[in-house]
Amino acid sequence: MLKLDNQLCFAIVTAARNVVSIYRPVLEPLGLTHPQYLVMLALWEESPRTLGEIATALALEPATASPLVKRLERQGLVRRERSARDERRLEIGLTEDGAALRERALAVPEQIMARVGLDVAQLAALRDALRPFAGHLEA
Image (cartoon, rainbow, N blue to C red; front, side, top):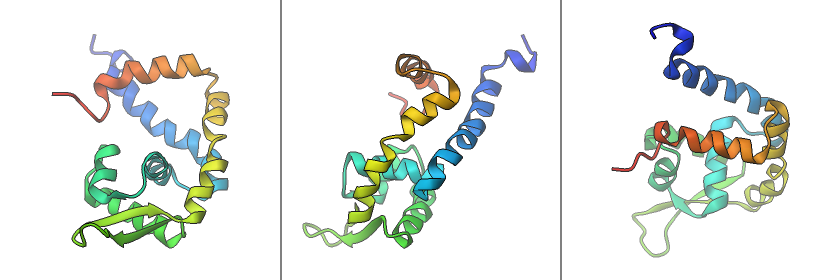
């Protein structure tokens, strides 16, 4: 039972490391790193969002999400603005270029499936099997 190759934790850790390597060549033409891609996915779902909302969506600490947002802002993909409803809130929204990048990103899932040899149903089953170990654990 204590053989390394039998350990779920080892399989998940090595898979997580390899996922970034699999995504890198697919995301490079978009000018995104894997963590930046995740931020953009969150904003393509809902924009604007606060830094805290982005961090929660990505199961990150705000201090980890903040540099990602700043880099995306320097790239011209997002902008940070004070909320019109509550000036204490800083909202992160998509720029025109950031919104347009979504169209190019539509090809990413298909390219990833081709690289790993899984179809949509297999990928969904794998994702669903990992839910107990991923981010948003329910109380």
